[in-house]
Amino acid sequence: MTAILWSWAVAAALLLALAARLGALVKLKPSPFGILLDPRGRYSLNRLQLVVWSVVIVSLVAGVFFGRLIEGVDDPLGFTIPDQVLGLLGISVGTAVTVGAVKATKSATSGASDALASYQNTRRMPFSGQVFLLEEGDRADEVLDVSKFQSFGITIVLVVAYVAMAIHAIVNAKSASHVTALPDISGTFLVLLGISYGGYAGGKLPSQTGSPPVAASPEPLPSTAAAAAGVRPTPAPSPYATAAVQAPRPPAAAWPPARSPAGASPEQPLGQAST
Image (cartoon, rainbow, N blue to C red; front, side):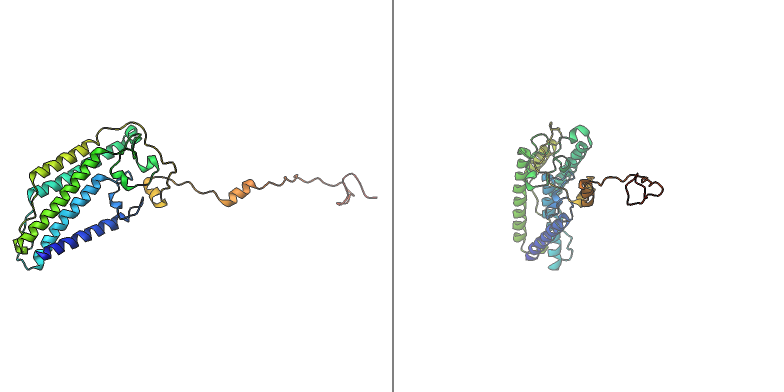
């Protein structure tokens, strides 16, 4: 029992560390939360939900396996994953695919892409509040998206409830050999999750009107990300070129030079021959 809990905690910590390391590789804004950035350069609620459920479920599977292995169970993989839990993962992954397809379609459409609050349109670096704000239209990044808030709240409640149920079931099992299945989730909660995620995905279908506000002080894109985003940085002017433009140009010398008459000295003015 203790071996499963410790294995679960270690697996979750390793997955979170891996997610943070991968996020640091994102060129637009390297940070531990970079894994949550979508192709538009915004923090995505859908990606947050997918990462949270993946860490919880995958780490629990790893914890049960390694806990049973440590305690010497004959078949460490001799446990099942309930259909409701598989359905939960299916809803999460399916919503991510659907939302990603809708975003990609809008980004490829000329009229709809102008209303997207992407970095290319707003020149605003990603910030955590984008998880709850509108993504399109003239009020993007200024008004709360209620469907996002509702979906986030339901996700947090269900994640906390499932983790508590799993801990309770593992503790009551007394031994790792008695843990023969992952804790199940109620069908009612699964329907609630499906309604919430379905409403969130459906809210992405209509296209908003208007152009998103541009940042008052456009934040520069890092040079490495500029190439990836197709943005060509403006080269800085050369100081030598600036000096050449500002410096006065000397008068041009006459060419060819005037020739002196025969017998005239080069020091004498023209027209005065030597005697």
